[in-house]
Amino acid sequence: MSEVIRDYHYFGSCRMCGCQQQMLVNIDDMNRWNSQGVYIQDAMPYLTVGEREFLISETCEPCFDKMFADCE
Ligand SMILES: [Zn+2]
Image 1 (cartoon, rainbow, N blue to C red):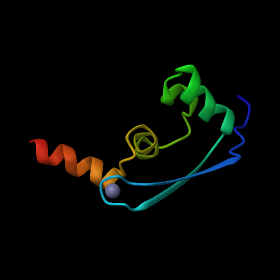
Image 2 (spheres, protein in one colour):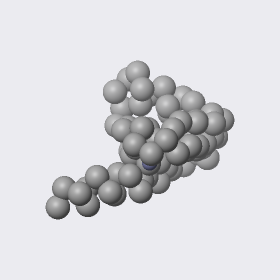
Image 3 (cartoon, rainbow, N blue to C red):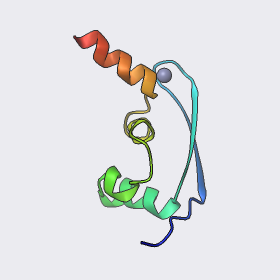
Image 4 (cartoon, rainbow, N blue to C red):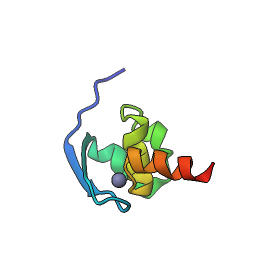
């Protein structure tokens, strides 16, 4: 296993609550996920579940949890 170089600082805001999120990723991994259809968990396994969820849905973890809580 080679060490992942996280050279890209990703910034975004949650579309539910507007809070700012940031995370460090590898730009090549980001591109593989974005443009080559690689599953996010395969492209960036080093991210937490919440971080991946934010990249996919632009929803922060607390808001994501809330959405599911409201469904029950
Ligand atoms: Zn939020």
